[in-house]
Length: 364
Image 1 (cartoon, rainbow, N blue to C red):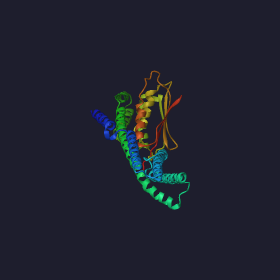
Image 2 (tube, rainbow, N blue to C red; image 1 turned 180 degrees about the vertical axis):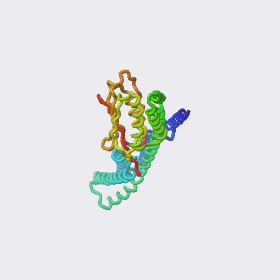
Image 3 (spheres, rainbow, N blue to C red; image 1 turned 45 degrees about the vertical axis):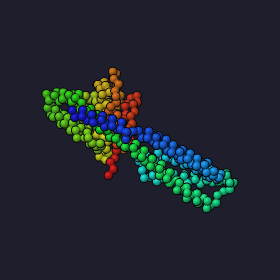
Image 4 (cartoon, rainbow, N blue to C red; image 1 turned 90 degrees about the vertical axis):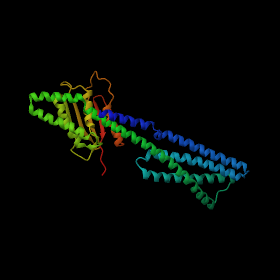
């Protein structure tokens, strides 16, 4: 009942996110803003041209008008190009203050360069004489008065679009994270896993009561961890490793020497990972491979450069294995997408299946 209500809530929230008029695609809004800006500038230019013709102005005014049109075009497209290049090097999402001042510096410098270069070229072309220092000073003063509103409007439009886009992505990732947590809980409370372990426990009670007590303790430890950690975004790596050792104890009683888990991870609490991530990867390895005395399954865990946790298993693929949806790996990828910009690496080579999940460090 609880799961059904949660699914309804998530579905409703997702529909609201995708269908709300206030959160439609930021890209579409940006396109419309560009069209509106182009129409506005075209209307202003047309109006100025009409007024100039009606007033029978001298050629100098037509020259100035033509210069302004070219200047606006250079400023608009040049600043757009600067913004796109800086998006690659200094994205707003990671370097807000630095990006603001760098773009302000580049945009202002480029804009002043355009003002001075175009004025000099137009002056030389139409009068065959270079402007003097006083004329250049006046041009720069008027240029600044002209440039500042353009840069301000450009920043305002860009910030509005990016804010809408970031809000949309954050909401989507939050809902994906909640859904992933519910999927993880559903997977870990799988009735098959529960019944298999109860069957093992039942057989141990009759044959070895001491081992049965140990099994029951580990069984309770596994489910206690799942229920306590399922709602957390991150857990210390050493806690996750302790949980996996308890989980492996249950699996070992079921598969015996046909399943081996080799853990080479230091007992360090400075690293964090999403809870139940390793369990999902171990479960995937068991689900997709044959486990027998002739073909034992070996799973290894170790750190790579203190940056990634590597989970690797030898391949003993089931012959009649039906195509899977890959929900376990997708679960982990989505949670990392919500928590970090670091990605999960998956490699399926001829003899082994390898997954590398980033180690995260919490900031104080």
